[in-house]
Length: 504
Image (cartoon, rainbow, N blue to C red; front, side, top):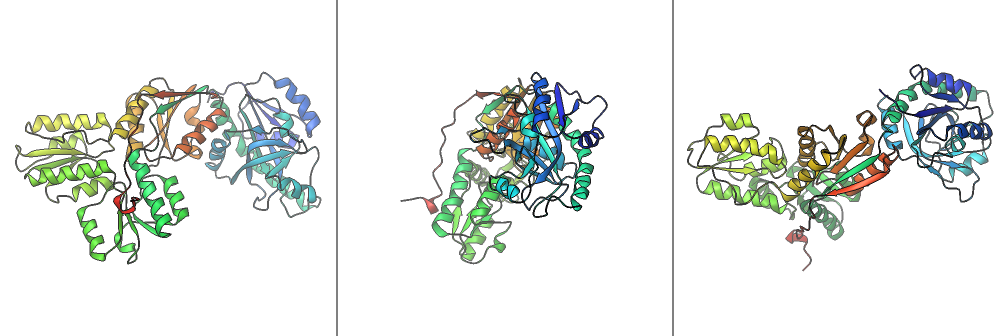
């Protein structure tokens, strides 16, 4: 791993020795001495260093901490300074993730620097400010880091409510020192990624009209009927959306049998098969249908083609809820084609009566290869009057292709079960640029970003915009201060709410 111009400060000799065990020979580790005065003098000699980090032990301020826990500072404050601006450490979530991968218990929060060791009432006073750990050097060591990547990682030794000045404290300090060697590799990963200089955002990105409509359907159902509101399957495929709606009272189930009689029921944006609708009607469940209108269009086409007596070839992925719903429109008359290989092998009853449909969240180039084979094998093949792949999927892929062409690496915000998000990764990789799918910034592996100068960022159609904002903020902590928006198309599509909750 090539690491650039950085330094790791360790205040005490015991801390430096422990950290050295986790670093390769020649790593830029500097012992500073304990206390803010020594730290200030040492820091003055590193004004030209590109990235600054400090690590060591600290005192815990909140009872939730345990000896040996690691605190990664989201900001570093100076105790007793009125109006003094704290130093932000925006890359903290990514450093925390690197440490958690090593099995450590990690907490994110403010670290405060005091002029002296604190205990008792002083510890309580600092905890009341929102800080979670205290030391006597970090603010002084990082005071001049504004505009440069900075990191502060501390291992907790003493914790409240135990008094500091007692024999057991020595054992706690020794236990904390034993953890310090494990910080070195994660901090080196951070340092190797501080080559980042700019972020290029693909636009359009994040929520599409169908996703916004589906989420609004659940939110308004909760407002109108109160919790719980039951949703068959995930309303959209995103972990954060699901967690947010669950917190408001939505209950997500796999089957209608899990829904109590009479409970308000929402069908997800991916649609359902007619058999599911019939089962809900038989039970008299009050249903709100949040199926995306573009998926409804595919269902309608399936019924129309099958009604002509055609074999319908559905290009899609097995197990996806949208695919299952479409297959259910004409059981026995629709066959799933997942790949070029499937297209070469599929057999139909009458080659002159064949139609095709496409799952709305696939990649355009992925579908093109399958269609080329189907058209060669079945010259009479007919399809929908307009593309089934939704506008949002197409737009996001087109924007990302252009961003990927100038990026060293691409981060895609989206959940693993999101088809459109996975296609964004595949589109990027087919263009030769490494791409990674993450639920949020805490899943970003710093090793992916080592040596990268330009980082592309986008989000799948089911990922909340705030996840992009959080990721861009964290990348600034690696030096990516410039953010550029690359827009290929402006979306102005809007879908009306389901009729069941539409205001008259």
